[in-house]
Length: 124
Image (cartoon, rainbow, N blue to C red; front, side, top):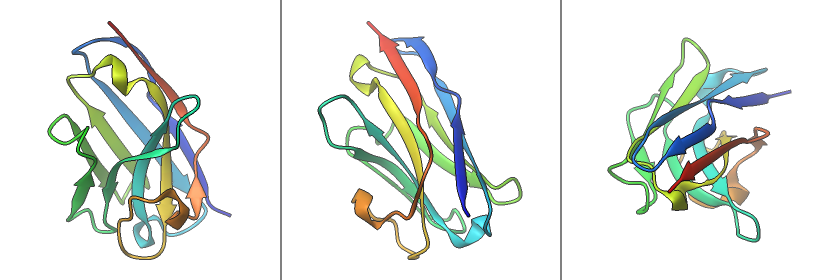
């Protein structure tokens, strides 16, 4: 069974930075495309960033492009999300997700495995 555990969320001021981590156990990490999603109350879970198996290609939502960076370390079974220039509208629960399909999809339905989420709050 695959388990994903996020960490690194917290409270930060506008313009600040946070780095989220997601450790994956239970399967061969390098077989999975990985992504970060986020969700606020009453809204759909939305794609934030995704990365291919080998880490060569990254994809971002328009709202995070240029501020967020997704990366992975396959030797540590970990995917990261570096978030800079944070804004109050980035406040959400952030989830990491894994998919064996081989492509980065922006639709949550493609992802087989999910973490429990970590709260990010950006104060104005």
